[in-house]
Amino acid sequence: MFVNHARRELNFKLVYYGPGLSGKTTNVEHIYQKLDPGMRSELVTLNTRGERTLYFDFLQLELGRIKGMKPRFNLYTVPGQIYYRFSRKLILKGVDGIIFVADSQRQRMGDNLDSLLDLEKNLIDMGHSLQTFPWLIQYNKRDLPNIEPVPSLQAKLNFFEAPYFEAVASEGVEVLTSLKAIIRDVVSKLNIER
Ligand SMILES: Nc1nc2c(ncn2[C@@H]2O[C@H](COP(=O)(O)OP(=O)(O)O)[C@@H](O)[C@H]2O)c(=O)[nH]1
Ligand SMILES: [Mg+2]
Image (spheres, rainbow, N blue to C red):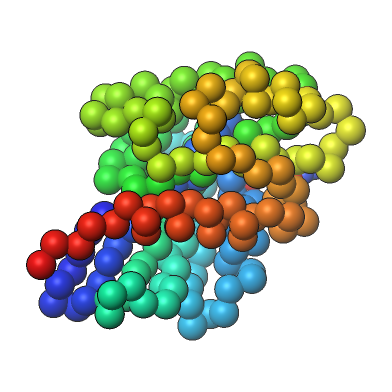
């Protein structure tokens, strides 16, 4: 979290993490479409195949007031594919809250777990851990036929009992609920000095 006292701005960083194609960009696109243009920036999407190049989506939201200050929520998505390890680590720098977008399809369980372990490893390198960090799991693609039941997803992925949501990001189901939940979590941990 970055506080700009002169401009009375609070800057929060929220990151959508998860394996490739789980629906991270779809979440951010839905938020972009639903919010009034006065409350959000343009959506920035960087697509590239170059190995060292950062690949992410970015959207900034400016919502309401907290103690007379303007909170800004900077939303990022990480590239899920294994070879973008370096980009993911860079994007996580200074993160305040994480939405882990899991793909509910049975055949994606290994990818979900790999991504979650990759996230935990990166957090540990930054001196954090999923055990204490503000994060939640979004079980996405609940509309598809070959999905893992929620109790099984919970047993396989949610070992720290984070809040979870069942979503269909492509239809906007539970997208804003997930966003509000992580915002509530990071704001409740806010401790403005001065
Ligand atoms: N059926 C279904 N497809 C989805 C859902 N969410 C995303 N998708 C599709 O999954 C694909 C990958 O989504 P994308 O947001 O690009 O994944 P990302 O790699 O995590 O950013 C796209 O074709 C989306 O339209 C969902 O809830 N249900
Ligand atoms: Mg994406």
